[in-house]
Length: 146
Image 1 (tube, rainbow, N blue to C red):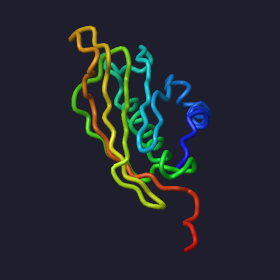
Image 2 (image 1 turned 90 degrees about the vertical axis):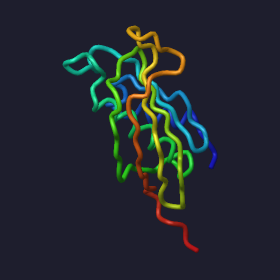
Image 3 (image 1 turned 60 degrees about the vertical axis):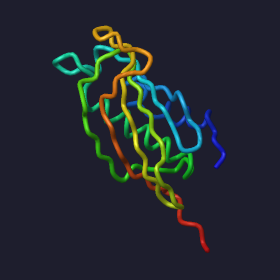
């Protein structure tokens, strides 16, 4: 698969919700993708933590981009599970996804969702793991004829 970073960036930019959230594709390489989201007040829930829906969005999109790096750009998530490990606080949310297994029509991926720059705890460089996710992504392209 030829990795086309500008194409991947344009796909992300074409998603209205991604623009609202402020997501940026930081890494897009064969079998891996990382999304960055700047944390702002509009993304927080009532206790001041990043809303779980934002964490799930980040995991879903990072997983889909990681899978797309091996399956091609015409992909859709067919299943996703996420476990929230701790409240997300910080300046930046990172979703780092990688392909565990892929075939011609689907890929299974894992994703770690972290926050960077938690002013309260001083954690910055390594980040704080907030959630883990696993997803299955299918290609919309027909299977090649054998």
